[in-house]
Length: 114
Picture 1 (spheres, rainbow, N blue to C red):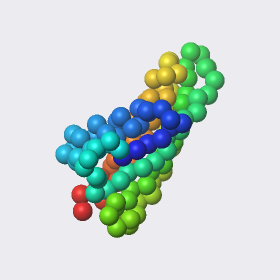
Picture 2 (tube, helix red, strand yellow):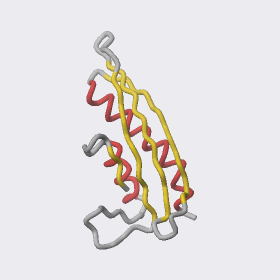
Picture 3 (cartoon, one colour):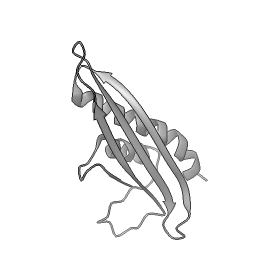
Picture 4 (cartoon, rainbow, N blue to C red):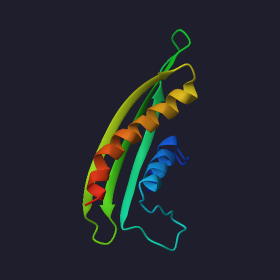
């Protein structure tokens, strides 16, 4: 799985990796000798609004493509937007991204289990 957010590791990538590992899926990176059967790639982005009464709002968008590596068959394209408020801008961004991951995981894990 590789999620690109302007060259930085994101809360979304870490959350997705954690969920995959907890559910028993093998997770590898580009430096691994083992190649994945299924590749999950995507883009995570976020935007924050102005502070209102000490609260920040962050909108996280996560777009994923799930594809069989050997055949190239695309299993799914998925997209989620999530908005989360918090008193910290950073926490609002991370919460929006992880909530988007949780929603996408519910959609694509049944497809991966087939």
